[in-house]
Length: 114
Image 1 (cartoon, one colour):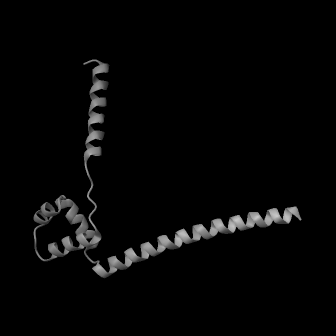
Image 2 (cartoon, rainbow, N blue to C red):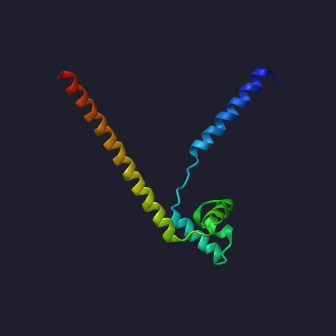
Image 3 (spheres, helix red, strand yellow):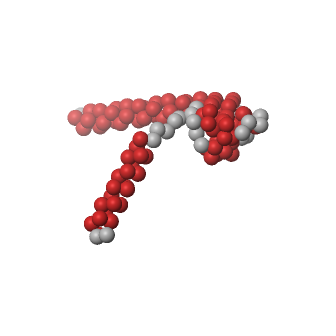
């Protein structure tokens, strides 16, 4: 095979891989759903069964179990509430900072005109 053929082959392969990655949809499971899956595993259900029902691999289910084994639903809800509050506070700080900068500029202009 010539060098051109090899390069074309690899370019087609790379394009095919990137297209397949674009086509794959990632499901976003809520933490509540993940906790339910972990509880099912703890109750004795097989990881393969639970994974098939959720549409994920059994490796994903095992990863969820490792991550969420010691977490309860109240802790997840509290963390979500804290994240929302943190977002609101960050936005408030940004708004107040902009307002402060505008007032500072006005004051400097007013002081310069006097």
